[in-house]
Image (cartoon, rainbow, N blue to C red; front, side):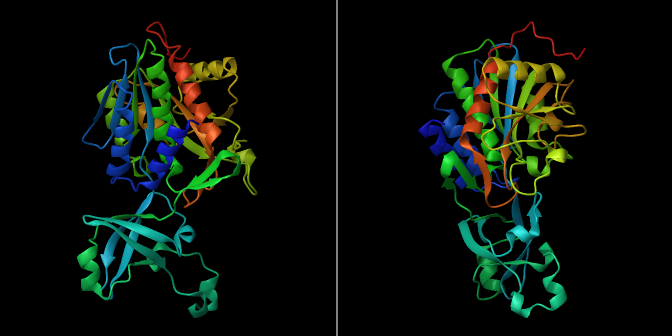
Length: 356
């Protein structure tokens, strides 16, 4: 990965943006896109768009969601402790004892997630898994009045977990799911801006994916507005190269093993084969992931937008998903961007994606 792209990724990962509160990373994404894209804009759902060769055909959407899982304050008691709900899917055990950053109108407020100390727990309580309702956020407030001057009900929060650079070009951070995908979509567009294709290509940093499986999130409205013929979604998938991971149920996906191509469910079979053929031609190593029912990504929302959109899903293996320390290999991000760009260069108006 180029140094500029790596620094941009680290900046994206550092910005708080849980579902419904994505403004800061979305703004950073648009600012980077403006350095090379023909046109950059946003919509009322918070989606960000960057286009290259806007008048080209066919129109292609490259989508990666920019939101992350988080927390939301739902009650402040008279002692100044904040109770919260989750934004997206959390394992409550992961958040115990973590530091948090609360997003308020006056700027971030630091805090930490409290739980009764093990010394004070009854024996049977020690053996039970933590529940969100039994946890709280402590901002060091003197009392409820003090806390309410600084924080309001409805303020969102993220875990305070900065980027860690590890050996073999691997990084760990919160929000890799899916700032990484928003970055890969933009990196593919950057390559296409330097070698303009026949297609008109729009990278989209979508919103509310982590909470939008029922409504479709920002991806559904974004796809409706763009009306693309083709969409390639970029997201993370579970790496299965660590102890206890179940390959029989989830496939064999390794950090450094290259992008993962989904097959089935929301994935158009013709577009899948195009990606697989290009990967073989360009000698980009890939693995395949079975998606028999749903992908649980923006692909599920995009594929049925309007009259239907030929959709594919390119994923990157991610260890420890939905934790403060998700881990990916930078080479997988680079290969995913290169595969997507190389595939887009093959598109023409003669392409027919009707399954036969």
